[in-house]
Image 1: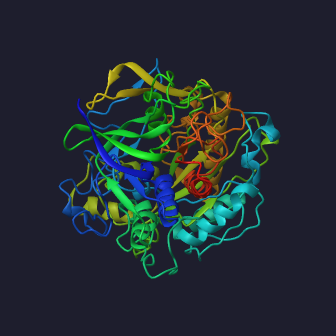
Image 2 (image 1 turned 45 degrees about the horizontal axis):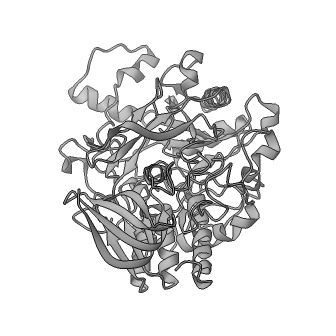
Amino acid sequence: MQIKEINKEYDVIIVGSGAGGGMATKILSEAGLSVAIVEAGPFYDPANPEQMTQMKWPYESPRRGGGTTRFFGDFDQAYGGWEIEGEPYSQVGDTDFKWFRSRMLGGRTNHWGRISLRFGPNDFKKKSIDGFGEDWPISYKDIKPYYDKLDKLIGVFGSNENLYNDPNGFFLPPPKPRLHELFYIKGARKSNVKVIPSRLSILTKRINDERGVCFYCNQCARSCMTYADFSSGSCLIFPAQKSGGQIDMFLNAMVRTVTTNSEGKANGVSYIDKTENKEYKLKGKVVVLAASACSSARILLNSKSQQHPNGLGNNSDLIGKYLHDSTGGDMMAFIPELIDRKIYNEDGVGGMHVYSPWWLDNKKLDFPRGYHIEVWGGLGAPSYGTGFNVNSFNKFFGINKAGGYGDVLRSDMKKYYGSTIGLSGRGESIAQKTNYCEIDPNKVDKYGVPILRFNYKWTDNEIKQAKHMQDTFEEVIHNMGGIPLWGKPGKESNYGINKPGWIIHEVGTTRMGNDSKKSVVNEFEQLHDVSNVFVVDAGPFVSQADKNPTWTIMALAWRSSEYIIDQFKKQNFQ
């Protein structure tokens, strides 16, 4: 394939436009640096009527909202999924790792749950506490100023609870709990499970003139036409463009490698224009990878040269190693007290109004790391998948019906609608060197780029944690007068722990550290081996914590971007 070179040289090339890439774009461009965003998918703006799915009725979809190419439904704003045609990935042995990719401007920030949790002081020093894994080379004090600025820039609702490892922030007013959440609060508190208002990056109050306020349509996964929820495009990239940033976008551009000069320094990237199926080379003084933990690892491992025969920045042989995802376990319950409940609009935000942060001391348990509990259920606009089998509820009352249709089916559906609740645990796993992604030596994608191969196994620590999740769900559901809708998973199914990758919180593939032999990047997410390459997605995470990673991705990206600006001022990037 002939490679065409684009003559312009940029100060910074940013690969990926999600949480980390969007933040780097905003901070670096507003400092006066020329920036090229290289994004593997198309342009996307949730306010564009041609792309908008928010407020569409189920009957506006051929499948009533059910998806064929989008796992989370026809209206979900993630162009991609677990499987993408022509872009496979492989597994080692019986590994079943699930890799979710979203190919569009803003990446996965367009459809995520907006759960915006800070890591706490303990989360950066877990080895010192329990002896597992490694400590981060930074502390909460190092990142706190960036969490603070992030809260104010983006907006996050919540409440200050003075919890040491779930730190206070700058919060907007949280929405009130809905009926199913009030039942959860009642059941959880009987078991001494702490419940507090959720912390979601959704505007319940106006913070500037560019973004609207949430109007409670419960459709955040469709991304917001008023920009009331956080997405990288609407909240970071578009504002940076409006403020005069020198930003060029290269869309539908799949990066193959980071290119280097004869000294081994990065001098740009090569990418494939997916619409033309032609390869181009883009020149830049600094390359910032933000393609997601696994995609950035893939790019670095494929960037082999005479100076970097093992892949760019891989002298430690650790790129791809220590891959880890959040643990996950779920249970759904039927609450008889909510039969024939009054029907009204309680949509709320597109996520939970309350949740339970980790509330116990692991020193008193048989597993070392904790989890939080997410709550879902209640009333909502019916769509594909709403149609449950009413007989699965009738059986609780000794009513045995065969089938059902017409008025009887409609009355049964209405009787049970809104009487269910779901509980999901999302926990911290311990990074293992034996869990990794690597280049498959025998397979390429449709663009000719070598693909990733995964090896991943949960350990007893995660499986014991999953058991604790299910025990907690059982107790809380009993306390609220509920009935589980399926059997409690046991040892034979590892207590219902989700497959690795399923929670879409994969981190750790380019881990941070002070020792270049034991890590890939330094505390500013800069490759130890190549000083003008940075990784600002979740790859540098040393550990995941029992929190969602997005807020920490962005805080670290902001911190790293300020470091890059300082290095430009010192003329260290020529």
